[in-house]
Image 1 (cartoon, one colour):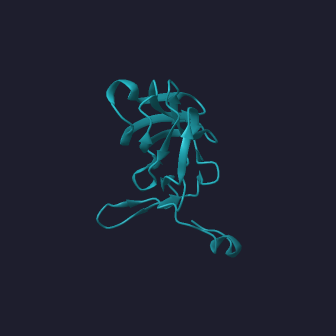
Image 2 (image 1 turned 135 degrees about the vertical axis):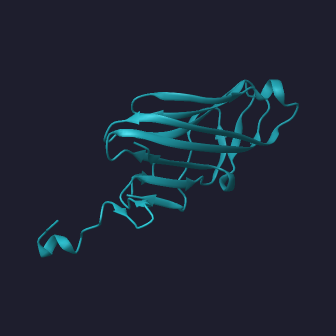
Length: 169
């Protein structure tokens, strides 16, 4: 591999295989972001606010201002979503999480707080992982749907919520 001196200073080795066979790909898309403060999430569909201080965002593909991952290349991406709600009103007919991508909306966990809780729930967790197809420049983000009934709100528990993903193949 050769390159002129101007480009050499900005060059990042795209793939390294060390003597043990470990493969290191520093430009491989991968991110992990925690939830941010989101109190009094109203009934209806809301985008979950992920993206406080990123634990990592290898290749800078996650936008913390709109809580969205943008695929830099076409491929299969593995996502993991953990949403923990606090103070979930037990009057909601149902509560569901969604992974929304440009190609498809994936409906994830669903519960019926008005059926399973006799009082407001201090904490409820939703955990899902998916392998999804994405084209270059497709986006992915997480939503929560609090279907009204007589419920009015929930809070995102920031220290226990996260969104992560990486290009698998």
